[in-house]
Length: 481
Image 1 (cartoon, rainbow, N blue to C red):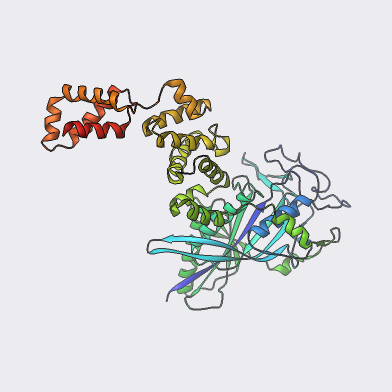
Image 2: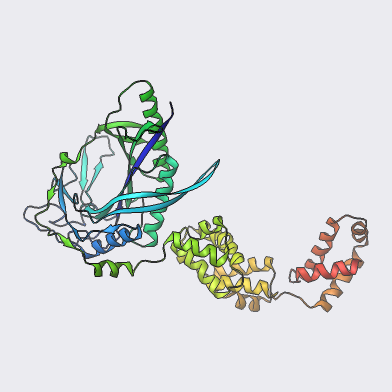
């Protein structure tokens, strides 16, 4: 019997507000333990939470970018569970009145036998506060410390429909989701700092079956690769268990990246275990149509729409578009370069993807930190097209631009790099090359095409690399016939 997996993902995203969701404490990462706290996020008796307006706005922005229907009224609830890093012994979250429902993320999946596209549904997005963090002793003592700096940090939880059936689909869903969240600037999505965390729910069933199997929740996955690897392992584990006649139990499992396996952590809680009830300290939030539209006007062009426009406007390949639209800043850098010189969008794309990306990777910086302005990339291509410099010289000019930030024209003038295109001057040089290399000339005339390249190289050397290659090629062929 063949089986299929059913996968749903729960993604927690830290919103990049300056202060916490219900108090004015800073959300800055890396502060000394328990310094970004106050009586509200420490859970002191009698304190009252106040909703941070920026949290609601950014959460709505994410909802609209993911094509969700925003609720007219949303409400906060208390989710009860006891854990040392949860100071109130309940978490302020949302249950039956979430911020929004019914969105989607469009993904493209490439496989060995072809590629396909599909929509992954989003069940809901709700707002909630984060818990603190347990810091375990590193000196061998059985002691843990509690750091409440994260307590009260604003989160949105994005819950997908169980629409994914392979680890690869889950990987592409997460990749596309992260790209959208970065485009709209609601989070830095830094998994190492806990700004984006993912839990996976997975079950298996015979192919053709519509009833869902018993699911396991997988936690402790700190990269998209780990999500893919954990799902691959868990699906195989469940299929093997079913084939042996074993019963799959609903549980939470941890991913052990070192061993490459999941292991049982605890039985999985149901909603009633948390004893949800409306938080009496926070009134329901009414969301008007005008509020929604005000947030909608702040949305940038989203990745999918940008990719479609780049294809129709600039005639780029899907591979080029994937690289150039991977980040909003890179897409804007490329497009600003094209606006500076609209004649060559493909050549500019190549320069951005190869030369610019090489510098970014070498220096470990973002495109926004690059000293070279995008219009100057367009300027380089213009100088090549106009025959002022060769492609080889252009790379030298770019290297100088990286150091000084000067325009390409200024560098060409300062260093005297203007390409020699004067046919009279070049003809004198080429005739001398022919005279000085009679044996090579004879080889060329006897059919050895490589000899022609040698003669071109000698001519370029004589012009100190500033001869127009196209003109040199044309004159050399003419004089050798």
